[in-house]
Each structure stands twice: as C-alpha cells, then as structure tokens.
Amino acid sequence: MPKSSRSIIVPDRPRPPLTQRSGVCTTIIEAISRKSGASISELIDILAKKFPERRPESMATTAKCQANLHATHKIISETRGRVYYRREESR
Image (cartoon, rainbow, N blue to C red; front, side, top):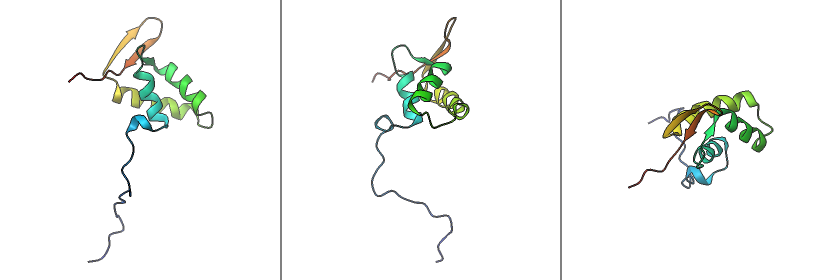
C-alpha cells in the first residue's frame, strides 16, 4: 500500500497541559483566569510586554479569538469595557 503524502505525525511524548506551556494562548488563559479577569486592551498590554518580538495587531486578533473561546463568562464594565473571565467548574 503506497504511503499518503498526508501522513499524521504522532509525537513521541504527550504534550504538557496547556497551563504548563508559555505561549501566547497560555498567557491569555492565565490572564482571564485571574480573579479580576482581563479586557482585550489589558490582554494586548500583557502580551506586548511578554512577547515584544511579535506584532501587536496579530496578538490583538489572537487575544480576541482566544478570550471568546476560553472565557466562561464576560461582563461589560464602564471603565474597562468587556471583561473576560474563566472560572474552573466545580464538580
């Protein structure tokens, strides 16, 4: 049977949980998991300090997408704008 040009690469070891990584998405999750949550402008400021080599426009797009994806709820604040929160579900 010939090999397909689209083969799936299986890592040798499992990837660590998302909260143990140090990328942009992990930073966003950590920020919205704080007790005070985080707005998009606050996320962009945090990301710009942690990843100065990356473009702020790209990080803003990622922050909007990931905040909406991972937030368990959001509140509109008069001073901060839309604030995203992520709460662990109780079992």
